[in-house]
Image 1 (cartoon, rainbow, N blue to C red):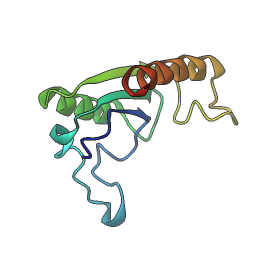
Image 2: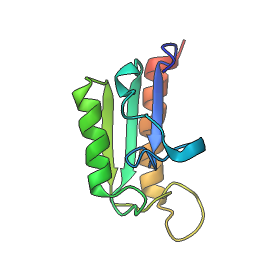
Image 3: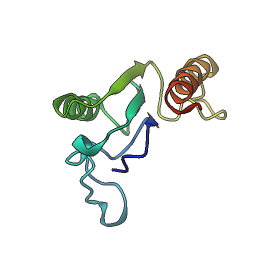
Image 4: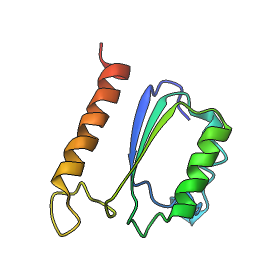
Length: 111
């Protein structure tokens, strides 16, 4: 992972737990988690069918195993609850998560 990346925010990051990201759908993201040097913020919806509890637990355990610097938030929301359209949108959750995102980015990346 790029050591120049100081922070990253992941909203409902699908396919990490199933190793099916990208071309060929056989990635090694979890294996490479120890290479992450920046701070992470992971935000998940508990009702997200794309990343079930077991998948979230797998990702979190790996981040803890490698000593990653991360924050973890699970909310009562569906996949894409921040997308401002459709039945899944939750404006209150979106506002809270955006505030957390901006706080992290300001703290880690502001000049």
